[in-house]
Image (cartoon, rainbow, N blue to C red; front, side, top):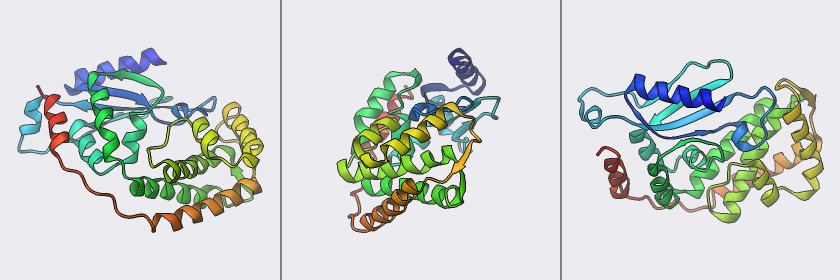
Length: 250
């Protein structure tokens, strides 16, 4: 599958006339709890030729491929990427810390060297809280639930706790979040869910786990109350991002 992904990335570069700067896994495989039938969620950052950024007509700033079998591939233009970094987009911090890297250039290290200063605890918390709340409300309120959906709530809840405790972007790996932030009393229940998630089809349904639901209820409310107490983060200028952008157009 890795060879197929690399071949697809080569095709994208030739067809779109772009240069891919970073390509990573972004979904459950990168989080460390893929199911037997999980997709490959490949995300990439690309840059176009200099002339494309000087056009009067707007050039689309994303490349999206139709989902093909297990492959889900799309990417963001460097212009879009740097604008989103200034806004402290949490997705970017995840992509650049993914443990599964398909392609990487010197740009990735340059980006990592500056991205930490653009991290906003408040924006990160709002992002993960929204993700946890919506998934919890939609998927975990019934008597029978999909086992995998617990991780689409547990992971953002633990990410919130990481940000509150450490003030830094949370890691991609679920195991790191569990070790640092999960209440140890819940570990047996979470490990049982992990076993189901990683060894059963995606559609596996189970009775809801009351202990975990109670933990999610209290955690979501706690994070919601703590966010409003945080001050707004100071905004950063464009100079460093402009330099990084221009360095890739040479």
